[in-house]
Length: 221
Image (cartoon, rainbow, N blue to C red):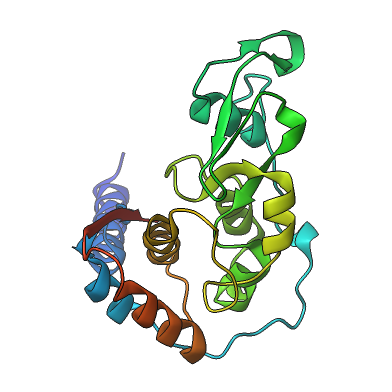
């Protein structure tokens, strides 16, 4: 190989190394999930306030109940298995038999999976209003099937979930364990960097006054 070609090759390699180093310094490695921890009142104060945007919402834009790990059980099944007070028997095709589930919204236990809805604690429409309208389809799917935090999806009595609909805590609270619900609602908003509107934030602040100011710890994704 001639010296000219060697020099040309060395120059090309150096240029590539420089480009790679510049790219790393500019963008850094892939961002890691961030841990957040604060007392309830402080966590509420940290929530961004923004006007809700419902335009363009369609539940189908949140592809939900997927089987992300390919084990035959979709996200709904996984929540039922994880939350069961008495574990069910898992059969072919992830059919569940037996088992018992407690719905903390109304303090009722169920032994039939048909009586349990898996509630998006921050409803899909509320998530859309609060920032998910700007998300990619894959991020919306991740939200709709979030098994990484027990607070995002919760098994509750189906009729109670249907009564809740897409309402936030300014409009609806469960009959039981309202402070737990409040803390978990705030945790999910923080986990997914979702905003609140001014009425919602005022309601959260007011309701928190009747609750223990316990610390919320959550991984922001």
